[in-house]
Length: 74
Image 1 (cartoon, rainbow, N blue to C red):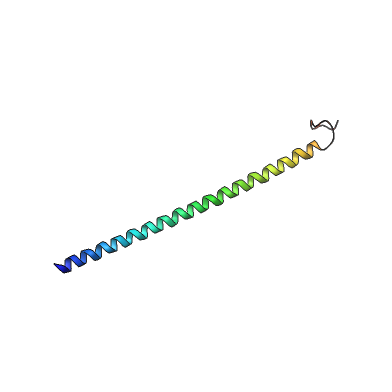
Image 2 (cartoon, rainbow, N blue to C red):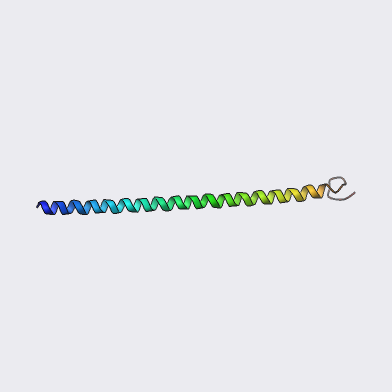
């Protein structure tokens, strides 16, 4: 009788350990996905900033050719 109870306890302990390991793996996956999302967001923001800078350079260069600010050289 005692042996059966001990075996049941061991099985339960093993199940708990397996569940804990699965939870840890899920948490690690979530953290990796979150980090990847942050990297992607950072890259998108950097690209947007670079595009804005290039557009502003073109606009300013277009307006600095003289004239009345309408893009013409008059």
